[in-house]
Length: 364
Image (cartoon, one colour):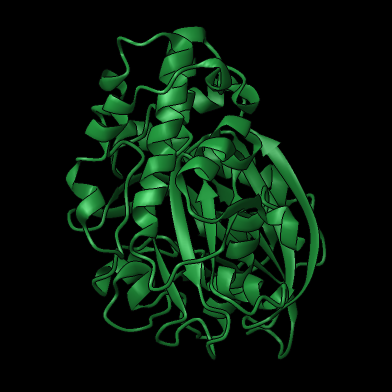
C-alpha cells in the first residue's frame, strides 16, 4: 500500500502518433496536484516505429503484437529507469486496437515485467475494467484535466483538447465538487488529429510529420472534402464516444487527388472541423480551448482551430502546464487514484453506468 498523503508518482505515455515515450512525475494524493516534477522523452527510432505500426489493428496472439510489445517495454524500461524518487508508476502501454463494443481494447506492454525491472508497483491496463462495466474505456485523462483546472485556479468551464494521432476533448467545470460529480466533466474523442497528416507525409515524402505545419500552411483547403468527411455517422453520435486510430480509412482517399500541400491543409481542416462539431455537444459553451499534445506545435492546425471554434484557442502553457507531458502526468495521477481505490472514469467521460476505477496493480 502507498503511504498516506501525497506521493511522487511517475507516469508514461506512448501515443498513436508514434513519436516516442513521454514520462513525467507528479506529487499528488490522487485528488489534488501539489507539484509537477521532472520529465523526459525517449523517441522511437524509425525501425521501432515500423515494428509498432505493423501491429496496429492486431490483437494478442498475433506475432506482430509480440514484436511491438517488446519494443514498447524496452523503450519504457530505458526511460523510466532514469527517474528516482517515485513510489508508484502509471504505465499506459501502446494502444494497438480499440473496439469497445466488439473485442475490447488492447495496449501492448506488460506492466508486471516493468514492475520487476523498476522495482516499483506499476499500475497498468487502465481501460479494460471500464469496458467490462459498459464504458468506452477512453478517454482517460479527464479526471486529471479536472485536477489541472483546479490547480490553475480556473473558475469557469473550459475545454482541454489533446491532439495526438486521434483528438480528444474534455469539457471541465472546475466549480463542481469533484471529477465524478454530475456536471463536472464531459469527454470524448473528436476525430482524427495528427495521424492522417503524418501518414500522408510518410507516404508521399518519406517524412514523419509536417514540421510546424509548414507544408499545410501554404496549401488550400478543399471544403468539399471537409463537408463530405463530416457526413460520417460518428459525428452525429452523442458522447461519450471513442475511436481507434484507423477508424476513418476513407479519409486518405478523399485527398488522394490533391497536391501535397492542399492535402495536408485539408486533413488539418478536417481535424479542426471535427473538434468544432464536437464542441456543439458541450453542456455549456467555453471561452477557452486549451490545447495539449503534439498538434499544438503545428501552427496551421492551431490556425484552423481558431478559425472554426467560437473560443480562444491557446496552448496549455498559457495556464502554466506542459502540453507535451500532460498525458504522461495524467497516468501518474491516475496510478495514485487506482492504488487508493478512487474512480478513474464516469458516465460522461467514457459512458460507464457509474463512476468506476480501473487498472491492474503489479508489484515487484
